Amino acid sequence: MMTRGREWIAFLALVAACGKPSQVVLEDKGSDTMVNLMQRLSESYRAVDPSVVIAVTGGGSGTGIKSLIDGTTHMANASRQMKDEEKAAAETNGVHPHETVVAYDGLAIYVHKDNPIESISFDDLRCIYDSAGTCKTWADVGVTLDCGDIVKLSRQNNSGTYEYFREEVLGKDGKFTTTMDQSGTQQVVDLIGTTKCAIGYGGMGYHSDAVRFVCLSRAEGGPCSVPSVESVKAGTYPFSRPLFVYTNGAPEGATAKYLEWVTGPAGQAIALEAGFVPLK
Amino acid sequence: MGMAASRSRVTIERLIEAVIALCGISAVIFILAIFGFIAKEGIGFLVTHAAEMFSSADWSPTHSHPVYGIVALIVGTTWVVGLSLLISVPVGLAAAVYLSEFAPPGVREVLKIVVELLAAIPSVVWGFIGVMVLNPLLQAAGAPIGLNGLNGAILLALMTLPLLVSLGEDALRAVPDGYRQAAVALGATRWEMIRRVLLPAAKPGLLVAVLLGFGRCVGETMAVLMVTGHAIQIPTSIYDPVRTLTATIAAELGEAVRGGQHYQSLFALGLLLFGITFVVNLVADLTVRGRRTGPVHG
Image (cartoon, rainbow over all chains, first blue to last red; front, side, top):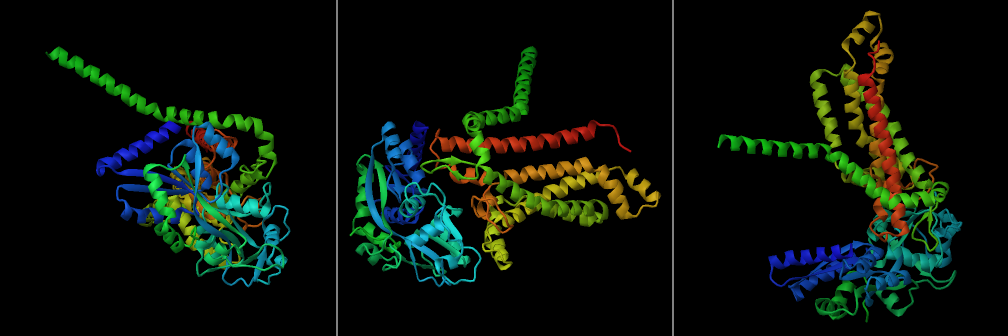
């Protein structure tokens, strides 16, 4: 499969090369949280270097990393760090993962715009999302809302956002209670926008008028913070993470040039525009 | 020269015959190949994990201590399919009776075409309707969230209606007119004639329609993935979100590490689905055959 994937990429590159002389196609696959950002970056990069085509696809951080291990992508986008098992699998396949941080992201807690909740703590989140948690209704977290049970939204299990949330909130071996698992942060936010009783989590870049951020505190009763570029940069927002691009070995050639541009001023300006937090 | 030409013509003829014969049995080859492929990846897992799979409702394949319980997924599938048949069977059979017994020929032709058009709508478009139209409607009706088992059941009912109506109508029209005339001659009203004569006579055909409708529902993926809410739980209310076997495979196969346990477990689910639809189709087929070759009733 590994070699077939390589052949396929080679074939695509060949097709592209036939159309326009000396064009390079770079595959970039993974995190759904990052897919809009990477899409924007790749489109803008066309103006910088028209000879490089970057094909961006989503599927989840796990999917991207798996493709890198299989040798079917040049770059893997991930909203979480690679796991030890994944690194081991990569080495077995002769792939040496190299990590580049391209931006930071605040992981926001979203509710419907009419939800009066003022702040939420990690304990509250655990009470709502943990399989052993006891919070079933909004009253259980101290919110008066004309609702039945809390509609708990989550992400599908190959999502980096899902893994990150699970590890940070529920712990390494933590288990989610029954949730509705969506295949992208956009779906989570859209669904919250039309569902008064819902709660969900996802990158802060997906904010819309139909939803609002909940002020998040690390400890019950402690100071809370709303995700923003400033609060993530200052470290006052308690739930932020780096976003990674993984390559096989230190990036070379066209990939190195591209990632240099992404982490440089032009790329970072686009990251800010897309709702993410720039490196500097 | 004439000899040579006719000889080469015979050769070409033979060749064409061979190609056509190959095409004829290609379906069998494909079915066997597909079954072999799924079985190869999934059967080992199904055998070694059967106890856990069929006893637990906890499906956490990516957890550090993975659990592969599929009870909630099987219940989810049965729930949505059962609800949808509760809607589609009465409506579909009533429509079939109307088309075959009451509708004037012109109306019947138009209705048949429209019903068959329903079947031509791609399932992802149905999913769209579920998300955009049914979701807010169900919420207005009191559901906490419109993406739930009922939403999926309504969509599946609409998707299976064409099948039920067409096959049901065929079955009813296959009942000889003599039956109808005899019933009416004995003084039966139209309703008595339909209930006592027509429906019993067409029963095997109607059963096949329901069975094929069931098979269609069980295998449907895209629409249920989009609208059932994708929550692993055993539902207690028609407004509860559920997750089906098909949706689980569709959502997770892309990421599962090739050859790993999670990957194999999804193939085991596929094998299970394949088994269910195979049995249903086989029963439907045997029912039809029994009807065709069996003794003439009445």
